[in-house]
Length: 129
Image (cartoon, rainbow, N blue to C red; front, side, top):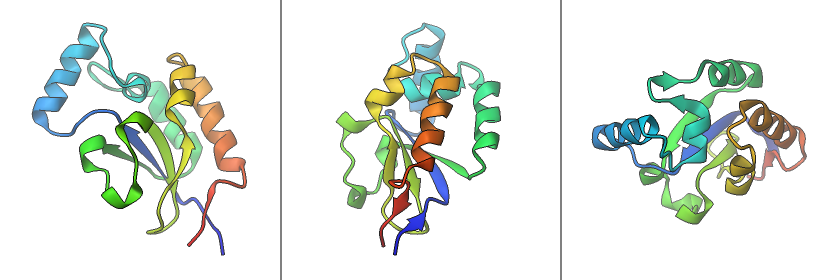
């Protein structure tokens, strides 16, 4: 039986940790962001207010994950990152918004929200146990 997505996972195309964070801040400040999802969600000084408002409107918990923390059993390759996943319980997540769709938002949080809401409303936004 399919279960509806109960949380969203933002998967960034960057590593976790203090050194990675400092490098990321420097890249943002220099206008050389390498992760389209990071660019949408974060400014050089923290999470963007418009993204925080979007998260609230989604009505689901939003988790964040860096590429070096992706469980192997999810079988996500670096070429697929960044992406936004939906997960139900402990089931394997499904891709809600893929890399190409995030890039196609061209930095627009409104466009990303539209795509994410459409994906959540689609029948594919369920996870098969």
